[in-house]
Structure formats: C-alpha cells, structure tokens
Length: 88
Image (cartoon, rainbow, N blue to C red):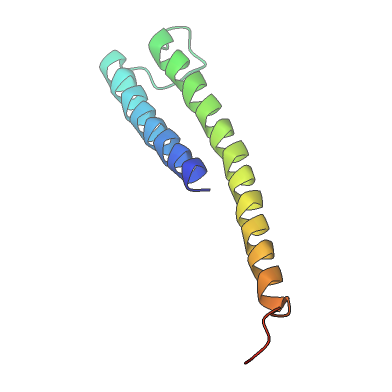
C-alpha cells in the first residue's frame, strides 16, 4: 500500500511539473490555443504525457483503494474472530 501511495505521489509531482512547463512554453510562444496550427509541438507532447500520467494515477488510485479495503476487511475479520486463548 505504501509503495502504491509513493508512486502516486511521484506521478502527481510529475503532473504539476508538466503543467508548469506547459504554461511556460505557451507563454514563451504566446500560444495558448491547442487548436491553432501555431501551437507549440513541445506543449502538445507535454499535454499528452500529462494526460497519460493522470490516467495512470486514476488506475493506481483504484488499486490503492482496493488494497486498503482488503486490509481494512482483514483487520475487521481479525477483530471479530474469537480469541483461541483460554483464560488461566
């Protein structure tokens, strides 16, 4: 679970960095409309990369939620299970 969370956090940092880089390229080229032919190729590529990272984050977040639910369910099962030890 902690490894999944760490990976998600790293990917989020990459997304934030890409967004800053996209904004810088758009500002430098004075083009913010991706439908224009003059829109920078670098910004298009970074947006595609950012979108892929966001989709990956969503998939990993789903897996993390499943793993946490499994841990929670297993923990709850252990709490409800009768104690096999008899008092002395």
